[in-house]
Each structure stands twice: as C-alpha cells, then as structure tokens.
Image 1 (cartoon, rainbow, N blue to C red):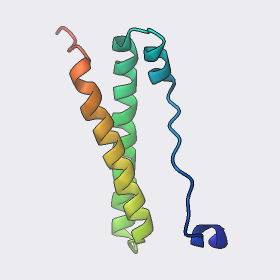
Image 2 (image 1 turned 30 degrees about the vertical axis):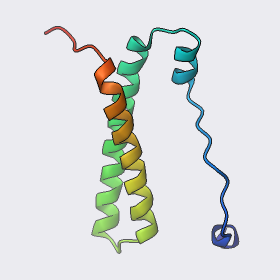
Image 3 (image 1 turned 90 degrees about the vertical axis):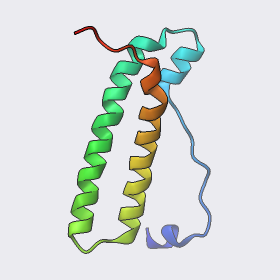
Length: 90
C-alpha cells in the first residue's frame, strides 16, 4: 500500500451517477433530487463528524485534506441541486 501511495501518478476520477443517466434519458429530476439532496446532506454531516475526530486526534493532514475535499464535493452538489427542488407545502 505504501509503495502504491508513493507513486507520483493517479488515474483521473470517474463519475458514475445513475441519477444523471436517468435525467439524460428523460426522467423527471424532481423526485430523484429530493432523495439525492438528503443523501448529500447526510454524507456531508458524516464527513464533518470524521473531520472533528481527526482534528481532535493527532491531526493526520492527509485525512484532513481528504475529508475537506469530500465535504466540499457534497456542499457543491447541494448548492447545484437545491434550486431545482420545489419546497414542500406546509
């Protein structure tokens, strides 16, 4: 694992998202987005919890940076999706 981690190259990321494929194929994004937004919010909260633990511990910077990147990803996805979700009637 250490040898692999030390290699100076990494493959480009691959995004596979069934929601995006369904929307591309003509699905109504509304019902899909509510569930996806909830998932992104839960993951963001989970990663923030891990970040608190890392910062409270010895603060391994690799873990901290990775968690910050994950949190930023989920925040951006939330930001992109929120305008397309209709607020629920009270």
